[in-house]
Image 1 (spheres, rainbow, N blue to C red):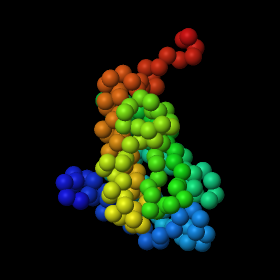
Image 2: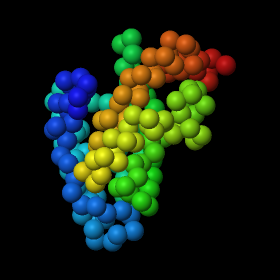
Image 3: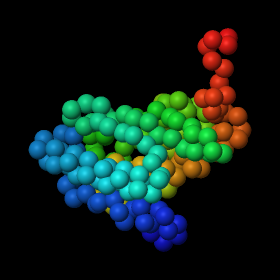
Image 4: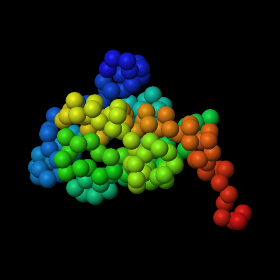
Length: 174
């Protein structure tokens, strides 16, 4: 955690670490891992709300907990920019981190792969590998998506690539 800002360190230390090394194909062990994932997500969400730093909503989109959907947002110049968020849990999870997708931003920045998958390879993937299986979905959001949004959204907005929903012409004006 050397070189990290104090708020990131504080947030990370309050997200519970996970212990079950199980992926979607591991039956009962996967169920246990999902319980740990939910506990960590609840702790992270609760902490964010207590700090008035609420920035995402997410839930499993299927009973197996292998597909997740939700929204995330970033406030820039006092305006909230909201994006759809989705990802699948890889079969090699937790050895492989999930690839977080923001489909609305697909093709709008170089720090993204096809399908709207955000680039996490250089900074986040080595950290994930080092902390497997202790890191989970909440850690991916905290150390992957949050810094990506903070780095990319202001650039996309300032360059005019992303527009605020209030600046978009409505269908009745067309």
